[in-house]
Image (cartoon, rainbow, N blue to C red; front, side, top):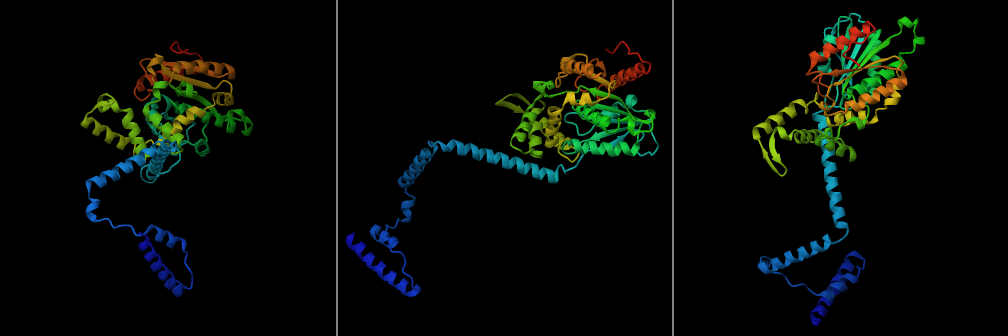
Amino acid sequence: MGSYAEVTSQGGGRAMDERTEQTGRTPPTAFDAAVARCGRLPAVPPTALRDPVLRAQRHRGRAVELAAHRRRWWYPVALLLGFMAVVYSTLLLDQRVSAALVWPTSGAQFVEVGDSAGTAEYRRTLVIVAGGLNRRSGSLVAESLMPSIGGGDARVFSLVYGNGIYDEDILAKFDALFEQWTPRRLVLVGSSMGGDVVLGIAAHFQQTYGDVDRYFSRASAPVLDGIYLDCTPLGPGDVRFEARTRADLLTGLTEAVGTDGGAGTRLAAEMLVTRPQWSSGSWPFIQVRPGDFAYKWREVWRDKLNPAGVSTELVRDQYGVIRRFDADGVFGALDPGTRIVYLRPTDAQADRTIDVQQVEDRMHVLANQYDLELTVIDIEGGSHASAVIDAAVYNGLIAEYQRATTHSALAHAFR
C-alpha cells in the first residue's frame, strides 16, 4: 500500500506540473495529498449491489440513522411545522382557486323584490330585509313576509351579501339606495344574524338622516317606523354551543391560520355537518349510503359552490357580525320611542341555534335603559328564524301587531 501511494503521489505530481504549465496557476496540494493518503477505492462489482446481505446491511444502516434523527428534540417540531405548512398551503390554494372560479369577488347589493320591482312610481315606505346564517340574501324571507311588510305604498329590498360582510360597503350602498328613492318611512327586517346587520343600518340611519334640523320641518323628516328581529342574537354568548358545528369549527381553523379556504373547505364542512343524512353508525365504524352521499354531494355543489352560494369567507363574516356587535352602542344610537319587535318561538328550546330567552331578557334591559318600545311576539310551534316555513303564522301575527299599534293598544297575544 505504501508503494502504491508513493506511485500515486508521483503521478499526481506530474499531473500538477502539467496543469500548472497549462493554466499558469498552482492548484492546492492539500486535496491531492489527501487523495494520495487514501489511495484508490476498490471498484464494487454490479453483482454485489444486488447481494441480499449487502442490501440488508444498507437498510439497517438507514433505519439506525432515521431512528437517531427521530430521537432528536427537533424532529417532532419539524414534523408539526411541515404538517402545518401543508395545511396552510392547501387552504390558501383552495381560497385563490375558488376566488377565481367559484366565488368571484363581489360586494353587497340591494335587490328589489315584490310588485314594485321595475316600476318608477314613488312609494313612501322603504323596507329592507336581511337574511341570517348560511343565507346569501334575505329574498326568501322578504317574499314570505310580503303580505305583512309589503303593500301598495312600500318598496321591499333584499340585502344580498357579497363574498364577505363589510360594514362600510353595506352602509354606503344603503345611503345610495335611500337617496335614490327618498322615502318617508323606513322599515327594517332581520332574520337571525341579519338582525344585527339591520340594527347597524338603523343606528347609521339615525345618525345620518334622523336629524330633523336637516329638513324644512319635522313632518318632512324621514322616520324609522320599526325594526323586526327574528331570533336575532346580540352577542356570541347568545349562540348555543351545539350550534357551533363541525362546519363552524373548520371555519374557525381557517380564521386561526389566516386564510378562509375555498370550495374544497366548504364542501368538506358541509359534508361533515350533514353526515347523518348520508351515513349511519359512529366513528370509526361508519356505513356510507352511496346514493344519499351522491345526492348530498350534488346538492352542496348546486346550492353552495356557485357564484350565488355561501362562501367560506361569508360564513366566517356572518359569525364575525355576531362577535363584534355592540348592543349598547347600537341601541343607544336609536331615538327614544323607536319600535322594536322581537319574534321568537314560544318554546325557547325549540330554537337550537340562539338562546332567545337570554336575548329577550337583555333586550328588555336595553329597551328600559334607552327608552325604546320593545314588543315580543311568540311564534307558536316555531323554530329558529322560521319565517319561510311558518309564513302564515308570521304574517298573521305581524298584521295583528300593526293593527294594534295603529290603534295605540297592544293585543293580548303580545307582551
